[in-house]
Image (tube, rainbow, N blue to C red):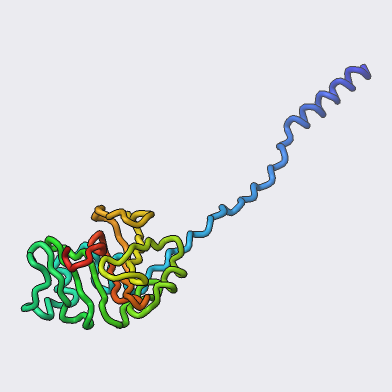
Length: 208
């Protein structure tokens, strides 16, 4: 009888234990998602800086009409800028400083040239009157130096190609998408002209 009571009691305890609700689980702790910092935006050159892509409102690849809208028409329409102006023409827009010339080839802006000391400087701060030595020091191995076509050293041409340019001197760039800067160095070892744009910066006699 005692065994029966003991068995009954044990069974009751077991049933009671089975009927009890399980303790509630601890609430999950949400870990905030780690968001990587956004990459720093590339610093664009100031709008008034001469780059391989252009200057201010002028951008290499513009149509002639867009150049005229931006800085005015030819300031000296009676001056011949090229033997075949419909193919290639060089002129100064009315609103551009003296000594600033644009080259239009087949109706498209392909080069901008600065021939006098003006506020128009490259993105490295160089312009007419700066020394070849300073330019070479600033750009280092990016400079491709070539002999000047007409003058003896220290006259030379210093090319800095942003895209599509050759790694060594003597290679003529034909890729229309190439963009670069040419510092034309005079016999005094200083910049006499700066040309920016596409393959047209290699031309040494205006349109040829």
